[in-house]
Length: 139
Image (cartoon, rainbow, N blue to C red; front, side, top):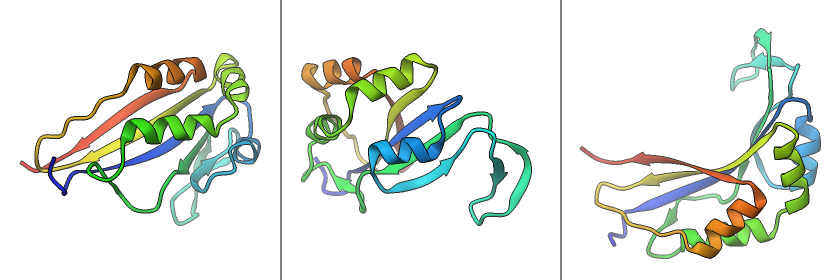
């Protein structure tokens, strides 16, 4: 694999009634952005917009810099993250109308191949966490 292929992973939580503060308190991860249901919509700079958020949305940073496929196993990284989360809380959150997902951004100008093991897929299923992929490349 080329040394130029990298990926980023964020963990995202959404819920129709639970506040962002509660979710942030449970996961204790650095927050990328946070919006609470019923709160005023805001721009990234903090300017108040018309309307209110219909759902709580919290996005957590899981690492600082892009991860290189040659150095970090995406599969192992996901399993390590899940092992650090409160599975019962996530299951309850999802079963009460919320959702949790890992957003995986893949960046490469070349072909990239990766695998999620059966163990990782089973853990994702048990935690009720889905995956979204966002692929970025050259031409």
